[in-house]
Each structure stands twice: as C-alpha cells, then as structure tokens.
Image (tube, rainbow, N blue to C red; front, side, top):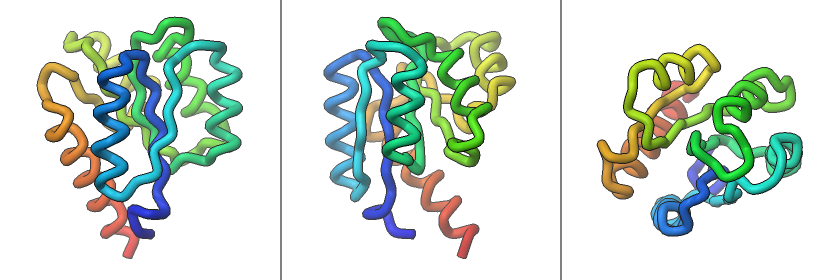
Length: 135
C-alpha cells in the first residue's frame, strides 16, 4: 500500500502544531485528517469509523476529550482494531508513558524530544517498515 492510500488522523488542539504536522505529512504523501479535541469522545470515535484512518496521532491534553479515554476507546473498539496510535504529547514522565502502553498505544513520543520534521520522519519510517514487513 502506497503512502497515497494512507490516511493519518491527527488529534491536536494546538493550531500551530496541527498545521505543521498536517503540512509535513501531506508533503510526505499522506492524506491528513484533523480534529482539535473539541466535542465528545463519541463524536471523535464516530469520525474515526466514518473516515477509516490507517494511523492516528493523538495528543493527550485536549480541551474537551480526555486523550487517555480516547486511546482506550480506540483500542477497545472492534471497528478500529489494528489502527496504530502514535501518542505525541508534552508528558515526559514514566507513569504517563506506562499508562499509555497499558491502554494500547503503539508508539509514544514526547514533543520536546523532536522537531516536527524529526517526528514526521520517525513516524513515516515506522509506517514504511511496517508496510515492508507485509510484503
């Protein structure tokens, strides 16, 4: 499956972060869908089911949606089985990382550890490696 067939759904409330990630993933050939974390978890899950993203990038601190609860719901929903979730957060503590792993996060990134370019490059590399293993 080529990058052109890949949808990445980014849930991020910071407009600058959202715009930067959207631009960089689009440039890398991905279709990018976005949500700012306003509304209910049910609304976000409904959008996921309607849009069928291949990957989700999730910020944990959102204005109305609890990122931890959303992660747990995505991982427990049969319709979303197998959709990898990349947590991209400001939380650098071990407890938060451990909690995300327990809830089923596939990858965990601390925002301060990466520039946007580095983060996108890392995610694209993980996706490419996964795709290459399927061949």
